[in-house]
Structure formats: structure tokens, C-alpha cells
Amino acid sequence: MDSDIIVVHPFGVCYIAQILRNNIVDLAQARASKKEIDKKAKNLVDYIAGDEFKTLANDMIYRAKLLGDILNKEVKAHAHLWKERFGHYKTIHDNMVTVDNNTKAIIKGEKVQKTFASKTIEPPILLATIKR
Image (cartoon, rainbow, N blue to C red; front, side, top):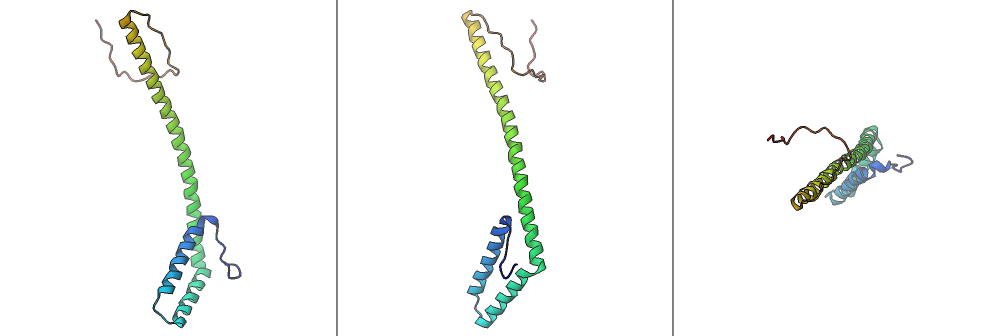
């Protein structure tokens, strides 16, 4: 609080505004005398100006910033994984098209196109070769 003005970091504005608004509404709805409401309002302002409120508000602001940083890291990590996964899906699709074209060529008696994977990967053996 600076000269009866509350200065709040942008990360804490929503939290602090919600708390203050709820308390102002509660005071307005209280069935109490003006003197009692004024006393409660003064106690509220004193609390807001106090160290406990500042410490808790600063902690909320700090954690909101950390969560924003974590979210940014998570978005970047997901984007990287999605790009990698999409590359694998694309290669699977390309391989399916090649196999389809080659099997059709064999049926038609045409020459099979030799292709090379864009990336050499040593996959586990999932399809056994049938020996004749």
C-alpha cells in the first residue's frame, strides 16, 4: 500500500480484485449498523495494509508467474513432441502409399519402385519373413 493506494503486480490483480470485491459485497449485504460496517471496513483495510496480506499476496503473485513459466515450457515441449509424432505419422503414411503402389505394380506386371526411407531407423522386428 502506498499512500492509501494498493499497488499490485499484474499477475496478482485478478486474485486481489476478487478478494476485495467479495469482501465489499459482503460488507454491503451485512445487516449491521453503519458504525459496525465502518469498523469492519477499517479492519479490512488494516489487514490489507499488513504484512500477512502482503506476504500471502506476494506468494500468490510469485506462484502465478511460476505457473505461467511452467505452462510456456509445457506448450513448447508438447509442440516439439507433436511435431516429432506428426513426422512419424507422415512417414507411416508415405510407406503405406509406397507399399500400396508397389503391390499394385506387381499385380499389373510393372516394375516396383525402389524407395529409401528418409530416416534410417532400426525398428524391432515386428514382421517375420516367411522362408520358403
